[in-house]
Image (cartoon, rainbow, N blue to C red; front, side, top):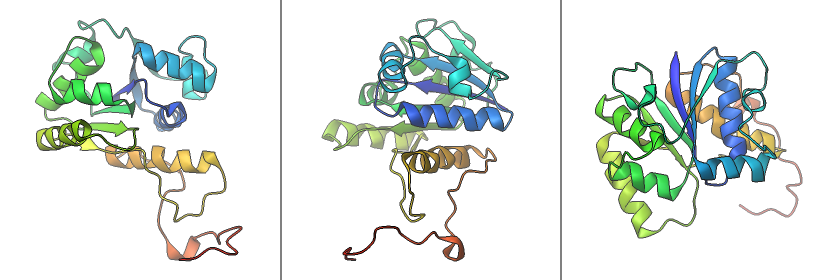
Length: 204
């Protein structure tokens, strides 16, 4: 399985890292594109001086290929490059707008446009709140074009006890949308729900 993954400059580097680790663990070939602001994100939130594929993959034994953001002649820019989908995580509002309006002057927006025209699965994990009227309009455009909008909104019904468990929920949901098997704890099952901690004084 080949999947295109893009990292842009919205907060949420942990989501990208955990998602890529999940893909690698499942044996997926990851074709990675990082925008300039995505690189800054990796520096600011994960301390990476450069795009560290081993750190992103979680192992030195990985199948991740990094492409130049400015190379619109790279493989993911062509419809002849066969893959099973593309995920932008996290997806900034700027990238959301570029994709919604069919711009293709960088490899991320070009690969997304190609994914849509080839009728492959395109998932945008938008990380922004509140939404502006422009964002909402771009959601409508992309939804009508066949993209899946998957804002990074975690569920709390599993009563997570750490940031890592919240990140796992979002990463697992993205993998579910692609049909990638994983062992992350994301499933609702009333029989296995962890009792809430520190729930005294809470109201419902």
